[in-house]
Length: 461
Image (cartoon, rainbow, N blue to C red; front, side, top):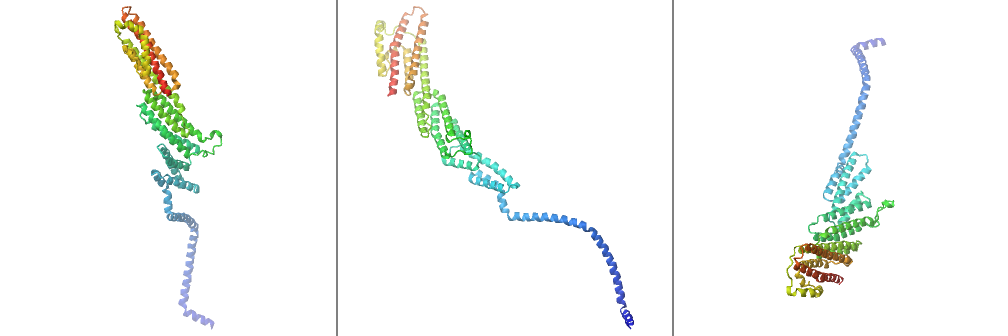
């Protein structure tokens, strides 16, 4: 029965069994193909893994770069400000805003400490150092100009903030810059007029040296020396640099006086210059730079040079007049010649004394033009001397005057010897020369000596 049911079922579902068998056959064939495909896939898996690993690395770097770009985009404003710091610093320097420029330099130095390995920060630091050097040059160039104390304080404050110099080095550079400026002022003075040059140079020393020293003392305190210099030889005290500079400036000033005073040919101008210089020394004495004691030898030498020059001119003029003088046949007439020889000495000596006391030369000197020219030249020298007659060199000037009178006598002796070679035919001319010598010894010389004494009496008054 069961068998028969199975056969009936098979007969009724014959198509289904056939379809199922075909399906099973196809599935088997498909599974075989799938196995072959899986084998080929299994063989290609290592290559796929390598390519996947490579792609993963590229993708990771791209993701990191994308993250960096996103971060850069988010902080683009701050990055742009950092990149423009050096340009902004240069603009501040160009417009003289040194406070802002130094603040920017400090900001770059801070970034260098925080990020020492960043190439852009290192590049900014190099640019900052170059601009800092420019700032330093500009500040020193401004110190080489006419500045008041507030401006000097600001400039020195900037230099201190930059930190390129020690305290002593900054003092030295400050004095060097101010000295360069002052020397430029002195070099620009016109020197064709020696009197005006010395007066203006004296005014410059009186005003500007005073200002420079007072500014230095206000900027650099005595207790503000460089404490890092432990060795005694390396320590510069407050007074050393300033006093060395002041001494050099005064030495330059005295040397200029020695060079230019001999070209002042008038005693009044020399006296005016001396008073001007003494006032300068007194003014600088308020800051401990009284150099009036050094002026006296310089002016004494100038006075002596002026007196010697005028006296030398007088002797030369006298010699020329004497050599070309034509002696008259008779000066006072034949009737009065004997009386003139007998009583002339006493009378002319009295006239010379009276002339010296009264202020006018004896009229009898007009009989002999060489004597008159000599007396006028000597009086011209005395007039120049009376404006500036230092008592300290009276003895040396007196010796110079005595030497001049000896030269005059030697000139007369030379003339007498040369005139004696003409023979005895010119007896009248010899008598005139004899009267000439009497006038010289008894009238001219006493009158000159009397005027000489009056110069020193007035100097004492």
